[in-house]
Length: 592
Image (cartoon, rainbow, N blue to C red; front, side, top):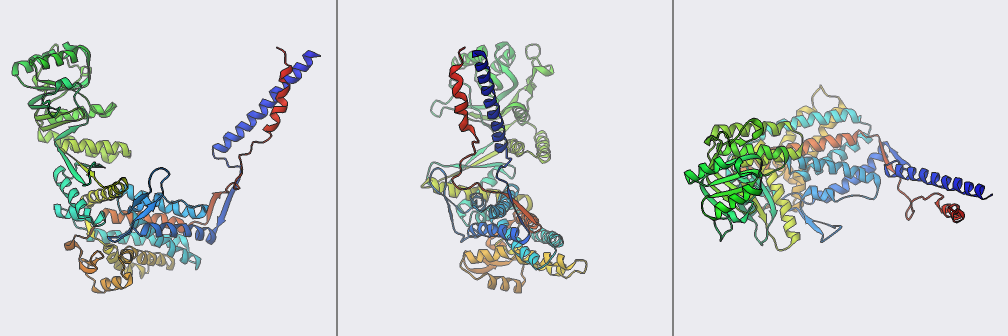
């Protein structure tokens, strides 16, 4: 009887755990996204109407930041103080609605702002305003019986015509003043930021790297590092030549670039003998220098027998190898690599060493000035990096290629944003980043009249298209929607400045001068190029294309699917696990 009882308990015990395994599987499925609550589906006009409500609410919050007299938006943060910003994409990213269908529309427009920000770096508020306008007008037209598919084709044709008009209006950026103007407008009229960016771009060139960081003072400052900069410093403070500044300073110096670690002194002994004879300083840039080799270098440096310094190569993996080759070309040397048959112990050739007029090294950074490389070789290397940057789709790789290109071009600038509080620094930093991105876009593709005027005058080109006999009535409706929508940015700028947008637009279109525009900051009509009120062509084009693309997709939406929300206060379904205790309680009789 005792055996039967124990066997029965074992079966009960196994059955309980089988049920637990099944419930665990169901729970895992739910966590993987298989909803046990079901889906809600809305169709046709009702789905579009609820999505439009979310688009309208998001657009209203974002559009208040547009123009020189745009207002701030305060955003609650999960941790820390609230964030205050005038950056459209930052506002859009912070918005999420409780209603699932409103949230669908808002998230699609938020995607427009994100895409525009990634492609052009600015124009996010304009793209949001345009997306809202096109979707709103398209929704009304579809409700009245217009074919959404044909209307979308008309919208696409209108966008092509506007892009062509923007290209015709575009003007190439050549002077520092024009760069300053673009940066000032994008920074919401902050002339100080515009000047800093203009000065930075003048110093480091079009291909140079300009970064933005938090400052430690009340003022915003510009720090420019000329020459090739490596983000690695000396391996030992014993190499320091200037005790006051804690820097290694060398002039007319040789450089040895080594791809492998240097631990044995014999590996580099011929090089050390050569620099001892020539009485010239040497900088070793290698994967690492340690052991006997590092100790010998330090002892000879302290005793004054050698002027030498060791630096760890910057970067990781393939990027480290590529950076070493960049340094070699910049200084006119070669990368020492035993894998390709090089051996300094058997045969030393002075041509393997690079040369630089001046090298400054601190604990975090190495700056090489006036490298001895041939200009033609450096240009060829820059062309190669540019070609590789165009081919890759990875944003990380593009960033690394851009850094390498800047180092070869010989310049890195850092804008240190200052302010009285962290909130002020954060708000100003958003504007500096926008201005910097807009400036790069302007340098790459030129500028057009600002204040929404470029789109305003482009709308006049759509009148002929709307009357074209080649288009169907529904396609003409799409053209007219784009024509009315691209007036909205100029009207919003006027509205935020306290003016009457319709009156301003009527006067500008009546005068028909493509250079004439409305200066909202001074409440007057002026020549936009002369006043420095300009927008990067790339930013305006990207904003329109992205807005029209997503709006067209929302117009042609006929069904929307969302998760059914769980009832308020409901706990996760634990099934019948409460019975587990009863089934397991008999284990006490299992006398093993």
